[in-house]
Amino acid sequence: MSVYKIAGLTLHDADVHIIQNDTYLGSKAVSSGNYEVSFESTTPSGLIAVAKKGDGEIYGYGDVVGVTASGIADLTAGGGATIKSIQTGSVTIGSGSSSSTATISNVDTDKTMLLWNGTRTVSSPSLNRYAYCYTKLTNGTTVTAVRQGTSGSMEVCFTVVEFEGGINSVQRGVIANSQYSQLTDVTITEVNTSKAFVNFCGWNQSNDNVRENMPKMILPNSTTVRMYLANVNNFTQGSYEVIEFS
Image 1: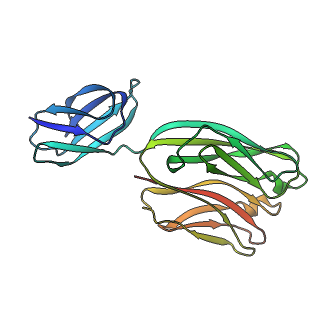
Image 2: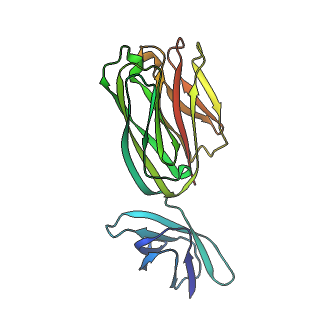
């Protein structure tokens, strides 16, 4: 009889099911934290622990990574990031202003991503360029929106997703191109590109041709975020987050 310890999952009122090489070994209900389960096994090979909520949704699992001489095996979380909270909202930039903020409930910025959900004009600006803005998570309680210009009023919607765990790092920034520069690179702390992606958080621009000024962003290598433009005769600012999962 071996005792295997589930150690990398955050559990809240879940049923944890133990499976080994496609054989079901039983389950145990837990209220929180880690727990131990005993079963007949000569090797931890193929052992999986699956944590399920009451509605059956899988929100984490663990794999055995080693067995001590005492027969204790630690299972580390392998089911990806689990969501702690989701907040939605909007920022309105009023006429005469180039930026504004919205207050959210406090989040851990090292485990949070900001989704840019699009913009709309509230009162017509004098030029199209004033209807576009980027967003950024300024701190744990503030979402900021920034445009180039102050004419008219506009609204940008956002979603803030905070994860319970599974996030290795979040890096944020704003890329501003130089005039006549079609691509602009910024250097970031190295990430594992097989577990990281660029989250585009919107843009603003200095002229009115949206088709030629809308940027795209990519992660060309482990230490670079790149912003591309179709037209180089303008100034564009793009906001990004690089999310790296554990």
